Image (cartoon, rainbow, N blue to C red; front, top):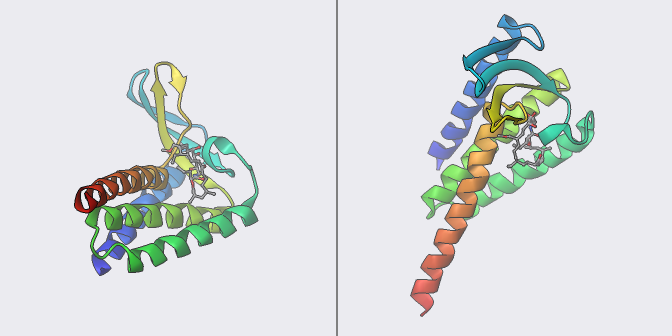
Length: 156
Ligand SMILES: CCC[C@@H]1OC(=O)[C@@H](C)C[C@H](C)CCCCC(=O)CCC[C@@H](CC)/C=C\C=C(/COC)CC[C@@H](O)[C@@H](O)C[C@H](O)CNC1=O
């Protein structure tokens, strides 16, 4: 069981290390071209959630994140013992949520730097924590579908 909390800790460490490096080595708004017209590292801040929604509503973000963390830990203790994919998914969500929570607590904003242009659309700039959250959400959906299928097979 502790393995999954280690995964969350590793995600938090990578997230905080990358954000710290961006803050220390780049000016706000500065952009480094990694792949021309596709991938840039741009120093950006966001005091909202995805796409900058609910800008500045820190209390709301604290409450939502604490609820997310409590639900994830509860689910990890209860259901993730026999479902590895679900356990890894939940540890990704846990790591991502805490990663952004630390930023919101100490900076009142989130440091973002992955800047992708997908078919000329400038996708919102995000960070390691967002990536972990998104991968976690996708893995939870996959784990649920697989679990439904397994249940479907045994009941027939
Ligand atoms: C990813 C969750 C967002 C993350 O939620 C969090 O922290 C959680 C723990 C707390 C929130 C208050 C609650 C979730 C709000 C849900 C939401 O927002 C809809 C999510 C859609 C999502 C599919 C899951 C698509 C994609 C998003 C983006 C790309 O991510 C790869 C854009 C990221 C950039 O806008 C970047 O500036 C965001 C900034 O870093 C702050 N991040 C957050 O608020």
